Image 1 (cartoon, rainbow, N blue to C red):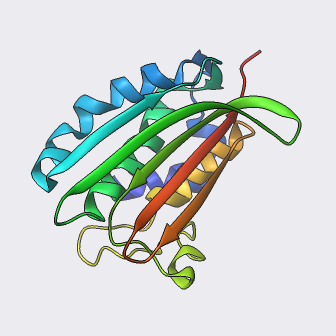
Image 2: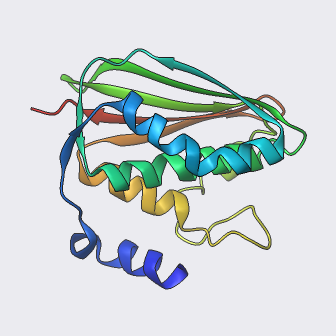
Length: 169
């Protein structure tokens, strides 16, 4: 798995999947069975707000990979349980219509120093199980479609990652 992620990071064009029009709510729904065991084991309650109406252009598997990574990271940030809020909204950025999907947790949060490094390859806060490639690969996959990932975090209050992708034409 690590070698695969390294190759995907080093040569993303060779791993690019077929780009399709996706409904953010549908892709989120498709991710939930994949993360259900992680969320239930961590005692995490899920709340959804599916408000986005526009479709985005991205390979379904790649968008699922990004969302699953963010959801699993959120669960790990809430070792005592908590609330995971998944929200999709239509949003204009840089003069383009698109959709934003936010994965917000009520976990431990991150310092500004950690936030400044989280998209760096091999940076991890997970001592044993982390490779440090999940967020860097996720950022690359989203950027390849003209989108962006942003993060807001407050120590002790939680973290919110937002994926924005332009509307599919």
